[in-house]
Length: 352
Image (cartoon, rainbow, N blue to C red):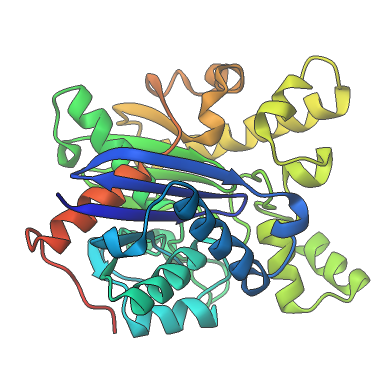
């Protein structure tokens, strides 16, 4: 039996699971209060790490029983897709936040430290910096500034492959638009196995999200920063953790937010705007695919809300049929890849 500990830390929650021979035998999702998620990630690390260890202890699981640790990938330099060792280079780049600040970095940071302390190999697969963009979509109106590929690559790929399997097709033969809706929202054009365009879902491009700003008018943004005398780091924190729906309604619990839709006018206005922003991004990806879209796929935690997806359908059903794959398939994908890597059944890349 191969036992894998899977760590998937996001902006608002920590997902932890134990997989035995690719079967999820134990799992939990710890939803964190705003007073924790408002702290810096380094300040959050000991609290989240202790929560992981406490959960293992409560379930009588020792780290000595773990064969490998699988971690959600964080913000690193752009790399090709695949499975990687979480080595000292990965750890250093995650901990330095040189490539951006996101809670997913904590998965590898905590995983590496646990692995080092207990001599356990640590792996990551399809991190958020997987870059398959076509060159034309990288350009902006300012030479020297290019768009980046930062998105929920692991869940996008896992969802797309699951749909392809469901319809007895190859992912490499399909054109799909995949929308991950969670703490961040990423809308991607998948063209025959490659993500050729996606919004930079962390620091503000495309739709707003639960706690992220999305695109902001340039002049208003500059004025806002000057008015509040914010540093660059404070602005990044604003974009990635202190804005979006949460800033309007005071909660990052999407189920609770949607429960207010019929009774609270302000919430209704914000949700209607949110739906339109996502629909517009879907239309952009459809244009890039020249209208040749086989399916539109929704995934992520917010996709459990059928009522929200129904708000979107009038804007997008003319493009392609719509399917929902609620939640994330990241845990299963991470566990399967780590198990294969541990047994030497797939190549493992070395980050340097």
